[in-house]
Image (cartoon, rainbow, N blue to C red; front, side):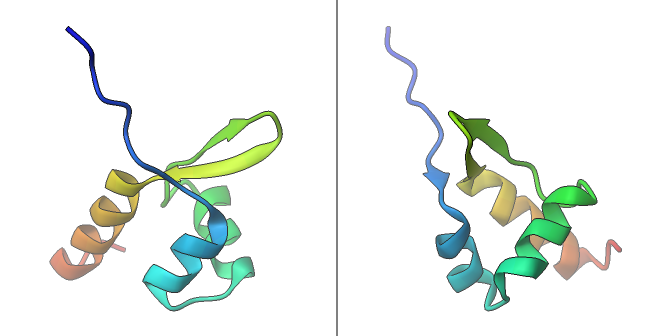
Length: 62
């Protein structure tokens, strides 16, 4: 059985989805409000992490 890998987004893709700038995305990552991983020095954000962040904001989480 093969397990599908989560969809990984680049920072510019997250910027477009959240309608924020590069600095804001990196601030969210730095403050652990947005989960990310590094692959050979490239930052990637799981699509589920972006959805979780948005859902949290809709619930009123800080």
